[in-house]
Amino acid sequence: MKFTVFFVLFLVELIFKVSATNVVCYYMSTNGYGSVLPESINPNLCTHLNYAFVGLNKNGSLSYLNQDLDVKKNLFKRVSALKSINPDLKVLFSIASPIFTEVASNETKRELLANSAKEFLKTFNYDGIDLDWEFPKSNQTADYLNLLSDIRSVLGNKWLLTAALPSTPTAAYNATDIFKILDFANIMSYDYFGPWSSRTGQNSALFESSRDSGYEKKYLNVAIAAKNWIKVGANPSKINMGLPFYGRQFELKNSSIHGLHAPINGGGKRKAASFTIICRDYGNWTKVWDEEQKNPYKYLENQWIGYDDEESIALKTQHILSNKYAGVMVWHIGSDDVYGVCGGKNQTLLNVINKEIKNFNLKVEKI
Ligand SMILES: *[C@@H]1O[C@H](CO)[C@@H](O)[C@H](O)[C@H]1NC(C)=O
Ligand SMILES: *[C@@H]1O[C@H](CO)[C@@H](O)[C@H](O)[C@H]1NC(C)=O
Ligand SMILES: *[C@@H]1O[C@H](CO)[C@@H](O)[C@H](O)[C@H]1NC(C)=O
Ligand SMILES: *[C@@H]1O[C@H](CO)[C@@H](O)[C@H](O)[C@H]1NC(C)=O
Ligand SMILES: *[C@@H]1O[C@H](CO)[C@@H](O)[C@H](O)[C@H]1NC(C)=O
Ligand SMILES: *[C@@H]1O[C@H](CO)[C@@H](O)[C@H](O)[C@H]1NC(C)=O
Ligand SMILES: *[C@@H]1O[C@H](CO)[C@@H](O)[C@H](O)[C@H]1NC(C)=O
Image (spheres, rainbow, N blue to C red):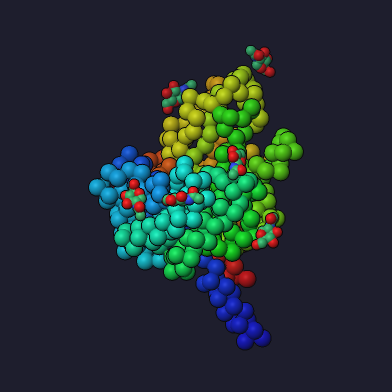
């Protein structure tokens, strides 16, 4: 009996060690000198730090999007230097470019991309590449797959290869095939409602609302986004679900009609607001917690915002953990309350995520 208990505990511990939860943090370099320099990030709160972004030259090689920040002010290396504080931290270059189409359809360019990526990784002491192609079209399935496999064959398994994927799978992705190549994928499970919508709604609700249309219930929440990807062949243990550290703001048509799915004139005075701005400057707005969607919204006069706070981020993290997905992805850590100006801890939301992961692991250990 005693032996069995020990054995089970041993197994539980073993499972834990192999299945560490990913906390993939996007670092927006242009935010750097604006507010968040690498040195103000606590690198123990992320497992992966994605440098957003690097671009592509016409011939396929990697390019600086902002050479002043990346190289002259040395942000590339100052980000990878955070590994000296957290030796387990992995640092990746996230590639975003309007010319993925031209590069992915040409074998020579794909190879140059892959080789140039490898040079970047070595030069700046990074651990991998994250592809943020927004988005391949349904007739580019083969190009997308070729791009991934060419990069993988140059990088081998020594370096990480990950991708940001849209919330809803499309024909551009053969999920079964791409998940065999990727180390993991970051699902952009946000931007569900915004100035482009016809009424108020959450940027990133965890669950559906009873007010949702059939289409909205099928696609526009974090829980269903994960299921949709798994249904088409994504490996659940390789998906990180995206958590936005910002909200989307609207102008109400009639300030006395301010619930979920209220009529709007379009985007608000701000189209989007970071968590810091919401917690610091929206104190006199009326806050409503939506128990169905597990997200808060706020309104003041004709302005309305759907967003994430400590509570919704905690519930989403729990959902991701209990479904045994790979982890969470955060866009982006610079919009967190990095300096604790709202009275919480520094990096308030990142701390919430880490606390939930720790609590979850303690609970499982007790079983
Ligand atoms: C690719 O283009 C970049 C920028 O124009 C250039 O610096 C680089 O030398 C080119 N690489 C090759 C292999 O042609
Ligand atoms: C691919 O790109 C190379 C130059 O990078 C060019 O010489 C070649 O013609 C291109 N191939 C096709 C099929 O467009
Ligand atoms: C692929 O589809 C897009 C529209 O989604 C179209 O503009 C493009 O010409 C198509 N490309 C090819 C090679 O058929
Ligand atoms: C994905 O590719 C595999 C071959 O690698 C093929 O068997 C499968 O049918 C493809 N899936 C879709 C949805 O096209
Ligand atoms: C705004 O909505 C309220 C409550 O439904 C209604 O009484 C009022 O007439 C509306 N105002 C306008 C300008 O439509
Ligand atoms: C709400 O607070 C902001 C400052 O945080 C202030 O500028 C604004 O006038 C206030 N609005 C109302 C209606 O109290
Ligand atoms: C929070 O951040 C500020 C500014 O970077 C720093 O001065 C302070 O020491 C930090 N507090 C903690 C508890 O880390």
